[in-house]
Image (cartoon, rainbow, N blue to C red):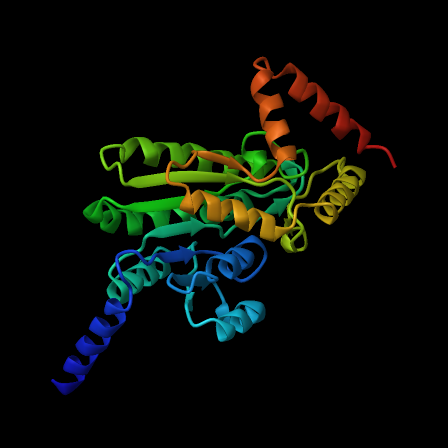
Length: 302
């Protein structure tokens, strides 16, 4: 009985430290890159509590170091590919703090290579992480947001979700599906005006994401893609080496969280905005496919 009383007292103490004006912000994929920089930026507001999640937080050395420096960062284990893990993390956070004001669905996974070289299992795993992962998080947190008629869900997509990439076709497909599903959530929850959905669309970002890409393992009989894949890999590395700094993308995420009248789409840079504009003005798709095909043809040359 005493143990139960102590636990209740502890929970009440924790919940009392989070006022109605202070935000509880949960971020997935917080161990590196955009997620880590978003934790770093948002935790500068000492009144907010940042729930920084990672699949294997014991390996997230930089995140651990940042949490050691700032009292308002709470590291939590969360694997977006597991419904059990998601529900456990969300329910635990709600139990401790009484609310989740903002979710940043950032965790992602990429498979590199021509579509023909990617196995069904590899595509399904990518979809499980990149599309069903945010769905699991959103499904778990929405009931509590509807109860308060308050909440903001920020999904990290990519310009390739609207302007598909030559080098990451299945990743582009996942990001496109994520955007469409985000639209669905916004439509479905229109009766709750305090719940807002936003999409962030970065271009190339200078992180280690390219190094973490899995290469498709499906064999193709006539092996037509060897040179093509080599040049695709070079293109990815070049794009990342000239990519936008992750902290700039974090600043766009912060804007999406704090805007009183937020946009639905946020492109992370003027270069991405130009691609977005070009894509939507080309209503036939002819210019888009012509440019992309010409680029791909050039990658079959040594």
